[in-house]
Image (cartoon, rainbow, N blue to C red; front, side, top):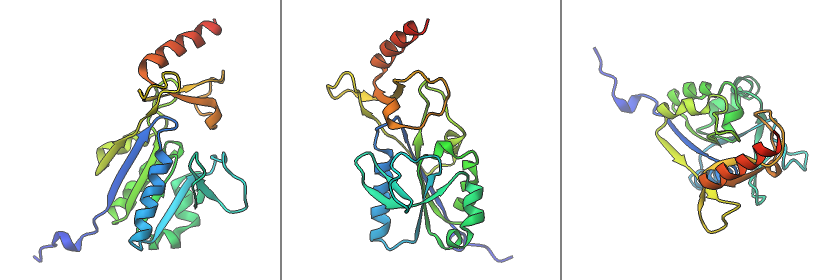
Length: 202
């Protein structure tokens, strides 16, 4: 029997960057985009269709908080990406996915990793109550690399790392898209502000 060498098999790659709001997740993704552009790799950039925070033109754009922008495809599910952009998807060497926590079928990317694609995904590692959102974190055991990003505490303002997203508004739904609704906090400030917020509502 002919032995199939590792060289003959497609070898994909999966990297995940997770963290709270304002931790540079989308900036991380745009940096990967720059590297892949330099290497002349065929990329697809995918953003969650519900993320319209920086929508200001007819062209779909992925934007960081400081308005670094790159063209993207807006989708609500990975299945939608496969159905509506199948030809481009088949040609792509690299997939860059923003707001991975919002894609209900994000686990479908594993099939594309197995097919040899390099996939980079960024997203929140928890909601405003430190609970998981969707199934993004289920990808961790399948990743080649996982990056935990942090921000700076909006209250301490002394360089202390922020690891949690704190919602400053009163909505109770898990998903409320909008950077103005959140601030990044360290563990101590998150506990203090959560207690203040709880006392206001009781």
